[in-house]
Every structure is written in structure tokens, then in C-alpha cells.
Length: 356
Image: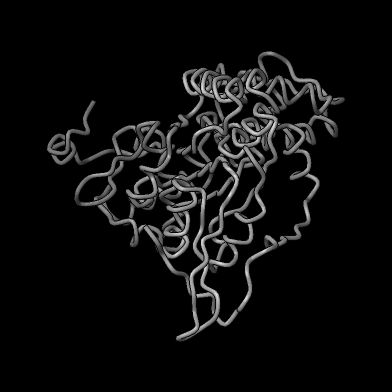
């Protein structure tokens, strides 16, 4: 199978990968410090972690590159962290990018021609990869080669460039948006699930130790229950609660500080933020409890559809406050109870199977 790629008036071979210069905030640098470096330090996702441990050990013992790996899951659950861990466990070089940063075939070719033997190439948000770049990846993943067009017009010719055997790790929050030909080329697929309170508590206690802040066992348990099943949120809240504790209570994060800090941040004991409650209230007050379409709802609450679907809705559905139906989003009786509002749609909810 051969494909040609327009080199867009560039009569040269790709030799250098694009360089991205980024500036990190203090919180971003701290987040990198909090990332576990090896599988033994990674909390939660037990089945996935055990499987990866077997696959990595087998590949390492054979001296081979790990099979291409596809990581699927909501934001903040550790897909990027797992890519770094795989590189560390394989003792391999890691190159990282995101699909939106790859605009032209030469951008991808520049990276692929600079990968080393058994190295790890991580693409975040791979569902946003352009079709022309997907086609280039097909050959790179299967044959470890890429086609490149030299020259233009009648004198143009295709050169096939060999690549070292490498491991592509693709991460996505929207597996359904990844084309079937691309997803089928991954030999390993891992689904990351939301974390339970005990797993999040372990993560919080570990992070508190790294940040050298004191948190009580009860405070860690309460914070874990309010972190939406997401380590990124748990660590973010821990850093903010550390600020409250340093100023108000001698640096100790106890349940009083957790409750006080979360109230100041607009987060209730269920982990719901102000915008979560605004979404539920809007559906009830303006759309009689639903159904309402995602586009209409996003305009009503002033959020992008992607943010609504990727961040807010999954937790509201998981906690039983919201339901997606063929006709749109509907709140459940539990949402009325949360907001202290009277539910007057018993018959309608019974028809939708929402009474419990």
C-alpha cells in the first residue's frame, strides 16, 4: 500500500521535528512533580495496570518495542501519566505532542523521522488528527515506513523512508470519533474508568506527602468524595485547600478546612460545582425538566457543547442527576431533591423510566 502526501512546495525531506516552546505555571510544574513515574506508584485502574505490567515486561524481555497502545477515558484520569510511565518502564525515549498541533504531513513526518529504536511517541487527543495524517500513520504503524513526495509535477517521485520500530500511544476522550482503520491498528487498548473514593484518598495522601502539607485522614476522605472521581481535580483542590490551611489553620487540612475551602470554591459535599447546579436548574426552570438538546442547553448556560458533554454531563449522569434520552437531556427526581425543588412530572418520568 502506497500513499503520496503533498509536500506543499517544500522540496526537501523532513529532518527535524517541530519544536514547541511552552511556559509552565507554578501549578503545572507542581502537577508534573505529582505524576507517578512507575506502575507501582500509579493508584487505581488495577486491571489495566496489571495488564500493562505483563505486556511491558514481555516486550522488554524480548528486546522489542511495545505494541501500539490506545488509551481511552475522560479527561484527568491519567492517560498522559500512563504514557510517561510506559516510557520509563520500557527505558525508552518519550516524544509527546497533541493532534491539534500537527497541521501538515511534514509536521508528523518530522517527528517520525527522528524517533529512535523502541522509543515511545505519544499523541494526545488523537481523535482530532487530520485525515491526511491518519493515512501517514497507517503505514508508519504497520510497516514502520512513510512515503514522501520529492519534487512537483512530472518530475515528482515518491520516496519510502524507513523508520525504527517505535510504539505509538494514542489518547482520546472520544473513542467513537477515532476512525476504525486507525483504532484497529493499536495492539493494546486500555479503558480508564473514574476512580472510587478509596483510590482518590490514596492519591491525595501521596500528593500531600510530596507537597509536604499536612492533611488528616478524615480530611482526605472528605476531599476524595468531592473530587468527581478524577485525580487531576483531587490534586487541584488539594493545592487550593493547602492555601486556605496555611493562612487560616497553621497548615493542617482537616475536615473543617475542607468544608470551608470547598464552600468558598463553590463546591458542595457531592462534588458539584456552581455550574453543575446551574445546568440542572436551567433544565428544570426553562425546559420543565427536559428533554432539551445539547446545543440549546449549552447556549442557555453559556458553555461550549464540548465542555458540557466532556466535563459536566459525565459526572451528573454518573451521580444520577441527569439522563440522556433519544429526545435530549432530562433531569431526574434526584436533581429536584438536590435543589430543594418540587418535582411535578411523575407521570412523564415514569414513561422515561426515571422514577426510582
